[in-house]
Length: 203
Image 1 (cartoon, rainbow, N blue to C red):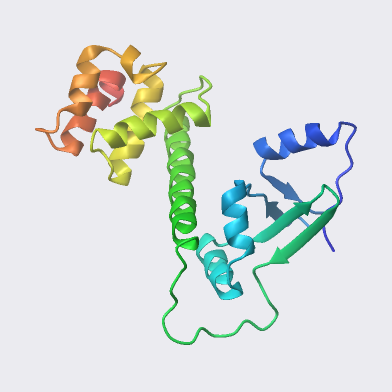
Image 2: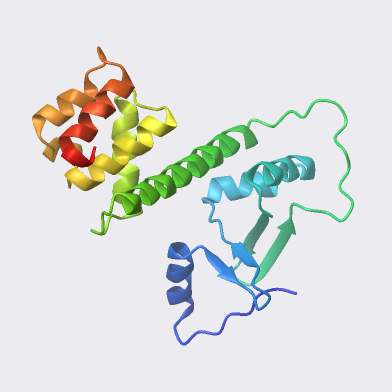
């Protein structure tokens, strides 16, 4: 069982492709998602107790495979699922190596979902100009640094900024930066004014 990929390109071409397009569909229509790990993260997962890895798998809601390459030849695949998983006994305590990994993965999952929701709102507002995930991610970071973190406020602010402005925050109009960073006003008030400024009558 597995997925076999035919390609005219090199392995480097395939690697770049799967870093950008992180899912592939088998002949039955089932989707498989790829997740890429930094070396330290991969090592921590590979050495983690199986019960830790299964709990991470359940939280991320997809099967987790861990692969290690030795001398570029041998490939070790370890799955986080088992046919008859044991029920945990007592309280689950994650190791110091796993806790930061779990935190980073949850943060990445939240970031990806926020970008997906912002894109959906852009479509709803009729915005057709291309906006990259990297751009939306950078906008998201800056808006959160302004103290706007509640999801509905954050998504609306991301969408408005993507429609109204381009480039890094320091290239936006001064009044917009002052508005968003003014913590004397509540997040909802700041986002409301931003929407009115960017969308006008549509807001």
